[in-house]
Length: 163
Image 1 (cartoon, rainbow, N blue to C red):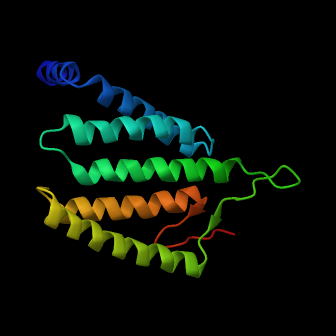
Image 2 (cartoon, rainbow, N blue to C red; image 1 turned 45 degrees about the vertical axis):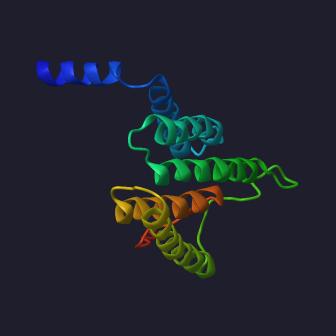
Image 3 (tube, rainbow, N blue to C red; image 1 turned 180 degrees about the vertical axis):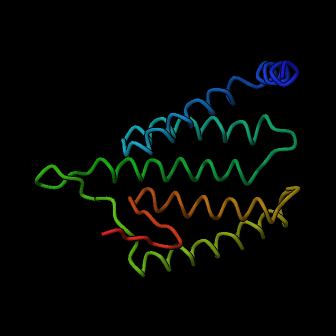
């Protein structure tokens, strides 16, 4: 157990400050998302900008798809922050949490497939990515999930309605 603890300490000591701060702010962002708190976005923005920097400029070799994914997260975080901050005339959320409509669900699935193919193609044609299939799959699923979160949508493969 001591060896594991020593390895964790050594790994932390050899981690760039940008990566450590990114991890801390992104953990805070997940916590705020769970609490349905708008602070999910400013904490997330700090984390994703630092992560993009780490992936593109510090990682060796660079992880281009993850860097680009974090730039997308930044844009969607700004969009989500705006959406979550909007209130209607009676001071209620203009975008309440809801299930996807059939159209939104199919747009999400279609967008996922299109993004997966596009990112995969870009990775194999213009980068030296070592795992283009996996990187593009992760990127596409994360981009779809972030879009739904910004629109305050909740989804799962099987809906269980307990009444």
